[in-house]
Image (tube, rainbow, N blue to C red; front, side):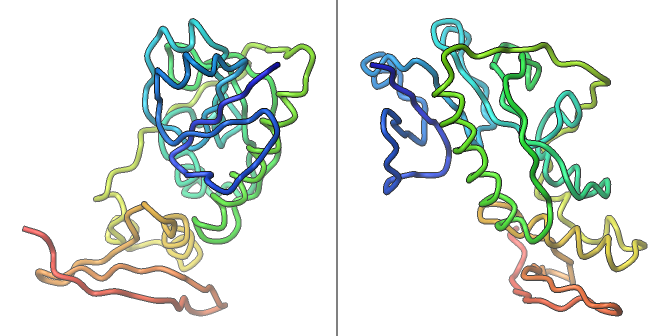
Amino acid sequence: MKKFLIISKKRYKKLRIKSFYFDYKINKKKIKKLNPTIIFFIFWSKKIEKNLFKNYTCIQFHTSDLPKFRGGSPVQNQIIKGIKKTKITAFKMNSKIDSGDICMKRNVNLNGNGEDIYKRIEIIALKMAIKIAKMKKINFIKQLGKVSYFKRRKPEDSNLELIKNSNLPKIYDFIRMLDADGYPKAFLKIGDKKIALNNAIMSKKSISGYFKIEKLKK
């Protein structure tokens, strides 16, 4: 009987899919005991040991039309570039980041705040995993086209001062793309305090939303 393991930083305690098992970390003992046909990685940004993808078929989901926007923070890096629609790419993992052979792509839009986008990605990626698991043979093809690579964003990159001369739509995109659990919110500094912004709503002449003021950590 085929078994499939999904490893994701999100915890799927209540999710039940036949032949699928879930974990939020790489548990070598569990993997060896389960001996999965495929290990799927969703919302996974850490490197994995070489022997894992050598001994198992490991498929990762990356939110870009690979080979474009390889690397970290693909959602944010595309929104900054003004991209409204992109792909979720399922590819076979190897020793080079986001460079493995592709087995499936699906469309996804980048509208809404960060949390909405990630929920959308999650649903599509799970559907892709189920479809791949049902395949009698998975056809992998090499990545073709111009390669672009972007670094993972750091907390200091959320400072609105970096785009202070931008128009309102770009400021709105900057705030909404960071509005997801676990991401450093867009912020402004005033003296020894920081104003974090979220739940942005765009109108013709203004942006409204919520804010939180807190003292900067020394």
